[in-house]
Length: 272
Length: 303
Image (tube, rainbow over all chains, first blue to last red):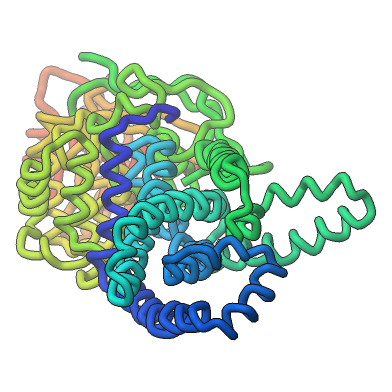
């Protein structure tokens, strides 16, 4: 039950990609995602460039962005990427809670997991599904990033080369940033009775959890360290490019590892 | 014959409910094995433990020398779990091919294998459809097909023919009989006649306790018994048969069916009995050497 065979792991991850891009339901989700992002590309990203470029608005933006710690972003010549970074950094974690809400729970309820566990270990199923979701998110991020680059190059083609390298780094940071959110959904999938319940539990975890820890930290300030149990705790710092490498990559990777470990302990003991 | 499954003192508790109570048995390679018992007797629990879906509370179990659920059993042990369904979002062939790939087949081999097993259950033409588009019986046959992917050594079918029409149920029985040279089947069913026809060893679970029977009734206990099923309700059958030489006891086990206990002698009792029926003008449907499996189990469950 504890072994992991790389080939089976990859097959399971690969099957998740098929689930999104080759099933009706998956394609509908991709269509909805595409429409949303076309609007984002047309308005916030497109118009933000003119806002940031005009001297009067730039001053205002500087004051606003500076106040919330985003002034470094204004120095980017690739203004479209700056806007993309802000939108993607907050929207993808929320989006991934929805699309990753059914990693194993649906198969468990239907009994399909019983066919799978005769051919793959539970660790392979859990980790394979997690990797599959990471690949899906990475693919969607890459597509939106390419579209943003296209918008940027349409405005100023000379920004392409520098924009490409910046985009690659952004993509890596974004992938790592969504990992703990996917791992959280994997954990909730091990005991929730439906994908919908897993999503509700995730929302409760973030909303009620934040309130409870806020109250605890107010009483005992040292308990504010408990904020680190929440995926995305580093996002505010990352948004302004003020975050250290450990904070940007180390915290989400550590959170993902811990969440997956807890999920694994529950999943290997659960009845199918 | 090599031992495939060895269970010692298996116990499973769900809270205060004892689903399996100190169950020990051994399954050897060969003829299909039946797992029978009333509803709630613990059959599905035992199946689930054998497949590694749930852990026993106590006891030891090895399947082909390994712990249930271990990766060494992938491709060697397959099962049709009760009520399990394929994912309705993918075509049947796509899912079966995926299972084949997990068992180590190449992409191309797995596609060929998916079609082969679908053909075995007579569903080659629905390969491109999704499971939601199929009837209940067809879905059941598809899930039987998934259990036949590759070359499994043990195939466990939980209620494989439940919900199938008589023709398809018979096809599944024939399939099991044909493939039983290649794999050892473990079948759970409420159709005892079906199991009697297919199986040698019978594991009988009742209230979590296990007893074993032989479906072919060749053991010492059943050597002095005959069970005859008559075609009609005739009068005074018990008293009339009792007058036959060597008969020590006759009783009606159920409508038109009589169990005859006789003393062994040099004469062939079955021939004498059939001649006697002919003389009385009784038509018979079936003559069973010993007790039927149904009677063996019914008697035990009534005790």
